[in-house]
Amino acid sequence: MANPIFANLPTTVFEEMSGLARASGAVNLGQGFPDDPGPAAIRAKAADAVLNGYNQYPPMAGLAELRQAVAGHYGRTQGLDLDWQSEVTITSGATEALAAAFLGLIEPGDEVICFQPLYDSYLPMIRLAGGVAKLVRLEPPHWRFTREMLEQAFSPRTRLVVLNNPMNPTGAVLPADDLALLAEFCVAHDAIAVCDEVWEQVVFDQARHRPLIGFPGMRERTVKIGSAGKMFGLTGWKVGFLCAAPALTHALSRAHQFLTFTTPPNLQAAVAWGLENSGDWFETMPRELQRSRDRLAAGLRREGFAVLDSQGTYFLNVDLADSGVAMADRAFCLQAVREAGVAAIPVSAFYEAAPVSTIVRLCFSKGDATLDAGIERLARARELARRAPQAAT
Ligand code: PMP
Ligand code: GLN
Figure: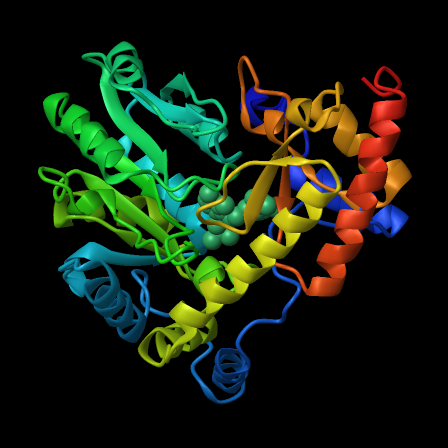
């Protein structure tokens, strides 16, 4: 009686692990959200907009002031020249933007190239649109694709390529050479790139985010997706940005029209204000997160964990096998949350086929005390797993 695309899905791993953490009072380094409440001035603007602003339906494509602010922000920070009226649509989070891109651009039977590990909303929505996913499997420690992998994945039926950069869960930021390679394939195969760039402002070590839409030949064939939730550390706000050339935007906005139609106007107004008055936020926010990343990485290394590089996002990963743990990631995470009081995310959950199952993702957008407690408990989880490697597999 139900559509198997959804009826057969498990609850998302983020919800599952946060639920277990809540039930047992565990330190939650699983689901990606900051424990800081977010910039006070932006929250004050939202409160003011609720009390004194307009609370009826805003324009379908978003408030003009926010669409202008998004175009302005990407002009300043990424050198893009977007026309706010014909190329920017506001959505209810990147999740809706992704759904609009898949529903608006895929025709039944079209092939859609996706890189595993992949964010959990992609495949169900691609399939709902009738798309056929072609999975490219990436591996630690670098999580990079090669020309050979792209040659195998692209075909005459390729319609879309979905790229998440910076990448959740790996924390990888693609080098310019890899982006240029993907752009070359998109142009040669007349494919559209759907770029999930929600982590674009969360990059470390002085790196600068490079949008695929800025590469030769990509301006007319890229859908660029952003999220205020990640830009301002307000993950519950669900204000997303869809940017694409006018012909693509036309189709995207028609899908958006029947997904949510609009996004809360008060939150849109506050995000517009935040983008126009960001001060040094986009320097201090990643600098602070980098400090937290380094604190967690150093603590974990002291306890014997093998820590992989994290160049962006709220996440770093540990390799269980290289940390002396012979347990699969999911079993380790279940034991960690139940017996050691710390929640983490098994990276195998981001694969549909042939999972890499030795990697565990940890969220570091937390205060020092939470990180320190997490390190101590993860050390306990490692000891438990090393003592009884078979127990929970
Ligand atoms: N894509 C990726 C890669 C994400 O990590 C997230 C959220 N963590 C989203 C999309 C969803 O973003 P939003 O909350 O704006 O819907
Ligand atoms: N994107 C967040 C993460 O990766 C979770 C979002 C969600 O729970 N759907 O942790």
